[in-house]
Length: 391
Image 1 (spheres, rainbow, N blue to C red):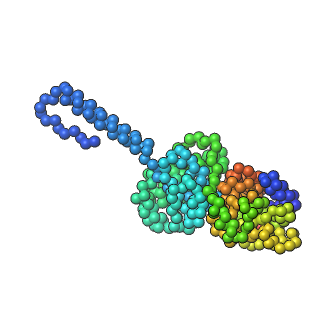
Image 2 (cartoon, rainbow, N blue to C red):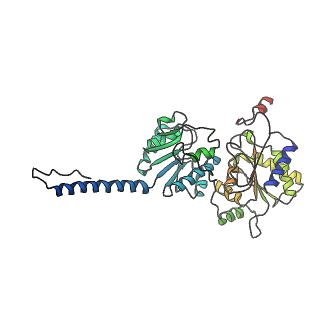
Image 3 (cartoon, helix red, strand yellow):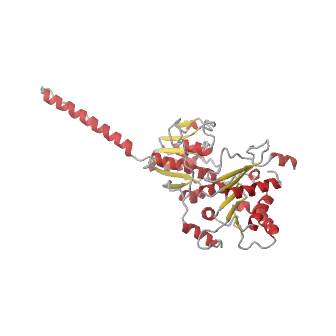
């Protein structure tokens, strides 16, 4: 991203803007017409009753759906739109999400998810024998459907080993061997990831609803109060006023990150205007977060006690969700925390570098997307190739 004052002012302006059994043999005796008629109608009535029972079972038997979940925070949050649509179209369905252990705080805040299972494999691991054994262990659970969200071959193995009869997903990596409802993805028809997930709630080629429900995490006031108290963020009887979440990290790579000095300058101006700042991220974002914190302090000219909180790497995902819900708005790179902010319906100013808001936009009620109009974006590179070549 270009490092100039225009970008900093644009971000600050964005923040301000967003503010039947068979019959027995009858024998050789001659039957009367009445007896034959009675037998005939009795058989028909029995067949009709069985047909009605089968139809009733088809209507009322709940679908038990296993969803193989995503491995990224943002992707898992966007999958909530799929869960909502599944419950709307089939209110009695039971949804189990199979995903990495770290997703539990997200899934616990999605009312549509009935159960979660921990995927006992690290990202990228095949472990074919172990996957087969794990899939077989799920065979007795009675799942009627499986929806596979990742596009990899290995992600479709477990539903196949579990013997789930209806296995749904998008085509990719020869998955037609494993999925019996393997769909061709028309990217023009489904340009956004949330639409691609949502489409799997319906039969192939069925038109999507005019409005796809946005992800919305369930957060209660006691959850928020507990997180605020733990990290010493005081309130005055209500939510903290004028508290902005700064999210400078991006697990994908540095090409998605706004420069630290831009975050520092924008944050310092907000502090001077009476805002309080909370810097959030994972332990991997600690270095850039500390650089931002020190940059704010230098520009403000006094210690940042009670006006800036650097909580990067200090919170659990659950605590990050609850703290985000207490904020007034968020300034974030295209990252998992941007989608968390959107999922608690926080106004969001979203900064996009190498990625595209056309594919994974913030799904908040109020948002503003900022990009740099350069010819090479979106390239979806993890590291900027121009910066690497220049170095």
